[in-house]
Length: 430
Image (cartoon, rainbow, N blue to C red; front, side, top):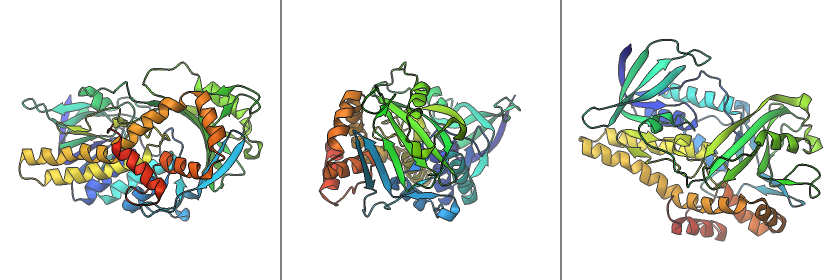
């Protein structure tokens, strides 16, 4: 049995960072917003839990409280280890972004953002599993979704319902079920990352630097086997640290690497001062795919926008998705508000189509550079050479930090900013 429900201006599917940001900005624009989430909060997501200054700037735009007493820990920058070197790189002092990053568990962050969207006026429906798009029989335009209530185990808990809206946003994560259901398949020529992580209790839970290990050894560094990927340690300030490793491939082809085994090998040789012992581990090692470089599109067509992981918006440079999900939500909401204020269907579609143009204009060239970067660093021997000869050069590492974190001045700035901005402009858009 399918039960019809009340209409809304906008339906957002998925209440992660991209979905919550879209719902928040749409609600602030005065739109009637329905935010549908298949789980219930708080719920866990595999993530590094670290936010770059670019992500922090988006939180500020959303008026999210980011003081340390609000449950955040600030960090000064990136501590890089590799090739026998250890280098601390402060976040850049530029006008576009703050000079600090933040960290908070995704379980807490997603709950906070969903509540923030609800406080702005969005209607949040948890335990609502969207099963497909509803399309206009005459035009083929997406005009709503079908969904069914589920229990906390994901099992069906009621009759299927239909929600209708003037615009639908798919922010349903890596699975991208809604986009796939309307024929928007992923591109196999885009990078795909894999990450695994867990948590440890540690005396260094308040460390002021996000730590990145550019070389992963299965024994004594320099005297054992160099494994693929990179590792991270992000202190969360709550007695724990998020510890994980990631790897990236220049295509979406499946790999046979056992990442949990790699993680276990790395942990056997982890820095002793962090005390990453089995007794201090909190929870299992969990993994997730990281769809990168706009691997699914178009970002808008026929009433359906894609945002966040559903659109493959993870950065090929650093595996971050939160900043771009938050940005996508802001840009999507503006396009939606403008479109729904137009007096004609043609005017509405022109305004909605600006979403893809704005996202590609801002990130397309940068992501193309990222694809080149991935083709280089997916080879451990090249990564080893770059690490050994690059880390001792501070000016080069300043360039690398700004490039990899996407924290450069897009207009003006110093020679490093202008170089990165120039490269991103001349690179073909992804």
